[in-house]
Structure formats: structure tokens, C-alpha cells
Length: 153
Image (cartoon, rainbow, N blue to C red; front, side, top):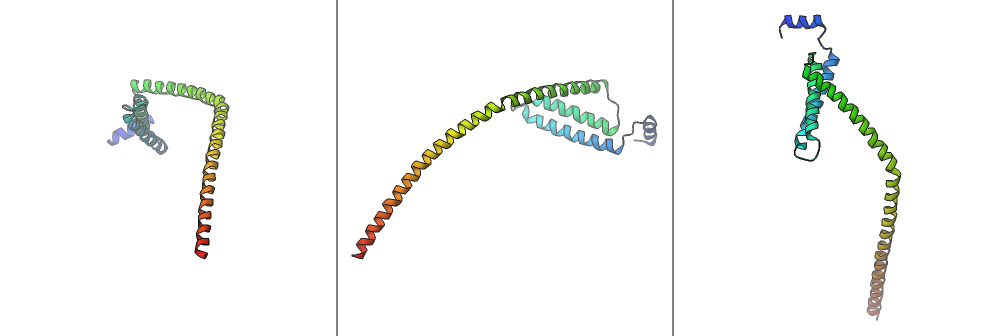
């Protein structure tokens, strides 16, 4: 960039501060990471296209913030769409959280019931196993005692 362009940007107030450059760099890195995660999701189950587009939009926004460049008309529309998508995601996330909270006692009760039944079954099986172990130990002791008596005679 030549000196004239730098001075023109300073006069217009478009030179980003260090903090804006850091924030823009972070947004670009996050956007690239999200887009990269979207690539395997294109063939695997998951929202691959949404991750790719969202990551690209975030990287684009970060690049503009880093460089101090104005958004094009397309980028402005993408920014507006991402704001709307974020609002929808927040709403749907809140609905999902409420549903989880509403069903949590039922899930906890069902889990406890299964754990109690499983614990009782394990105790029963363990008791049988312990009983067999005691029987085997008693038989071994009796054989040992008989052997000792035979050696003593």
C-alpha cells in the first residue's frame, strides 16, 4: 500500500486500531476453523453447508474488521442474515433448554429405576457367585484336611 492510500484511509477514519485488528484476526481464525469443520460434515451427518457458509461469513467479517474495509452490498446482506440466524438459534436453543429442564425429572426417575433394578440384579448375581466361591473354598479346605490326616498316619 503506498503512502497516499495510507493517508487517505487515516483521513476517512478507516484505519483499524490494534484491538480491532486482533478481534478481526480472531474472527478470521474462528471462521476458518468453522468452515474447515464443515468440510467433513458435507459427507457425514451434520449441518455441513451451514458450517461452511457460516465460517466463510465469519472469516469475511473478520477480514473486513482487520483491514478496516467497508462491507460490500452482498456482505451486508450476509451480515444481516447471520444476525437473523443467530436470533433464531437463540430462540430454538431456549426452547430446547426448556424441554430438557421439563423432562429432566422424568429422565432422572427412569434412570434411577434402571439403576436400582440393575443393582439388585448385580447383587443377586454377585451373591450367587460369592456362594459358589464359598462352596469351592469349603471343598478345597476339606480336601486339604483329608490330605493332612492321610499324611499324619
